[in-house]
Length: 272
Image 1 (cartoon, rainbow, N blue to C red):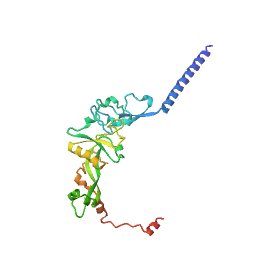
Image 2 (cartoon, rainbow, N blue to C red):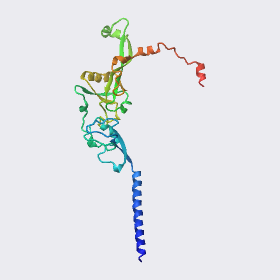
Image 3 (cartoon, rainbow, N blue to C red):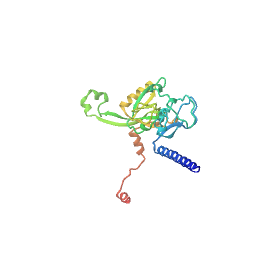
Image 4 (cartoon, helix red, strand yellow):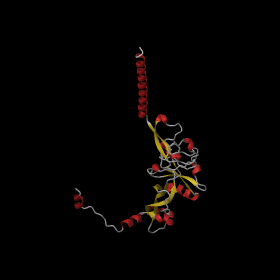
């Protein structure tokens, strides 16, 4: 009997150990199968009062059930850009919603003495990839219409409808750089977060002195506008006169010293 009791105890302890190990294995398996969520963490040691910029944050994958309630998802990392953190954050630690000012408004981003203007571009492709604080040039493509008559001036054509009907109307398209360098303040987003990339439209916000803001507002009704991405803090090509205008004369000059290329039968056959 004395030999049976230790044997029974050993068996019970063995069964308990098997049960505990199986529970751990099941939990680990559930964790592996659980969806992984990417959250924002500090890419390096961040100091209190530091303004977060691209590169200051990285991401960490966690099981969905382990994500802290106030953690910032990596998909929304752009919310942190331009925000000053009130506390120091160690490398690898979470950046929480409490660490950024979500109550900042678009008006807070307007420089003193300037006006905020929404700009809608004809092609939304580049706009969808822009971020706040990116620098762009704004190109304007517009049509220049001229009315010509061999025997009448423009003033005479206005007073003589019959002569105006015989006038020759010519339209020339010209492209100019309206603003060589301008900073993107925000982007029009369907969820209202103007500092988040991935604009749902082709509209951005820029801050300009009143005169230039008025010109840009009018230009949107007179021309097609296109954004051109610049490298940040690049000092080159900031003067419009350095770039000039592109029109029919531009392409005449391009073709001026070139022979006309012809596709002959021999040339066509040689490609077979």
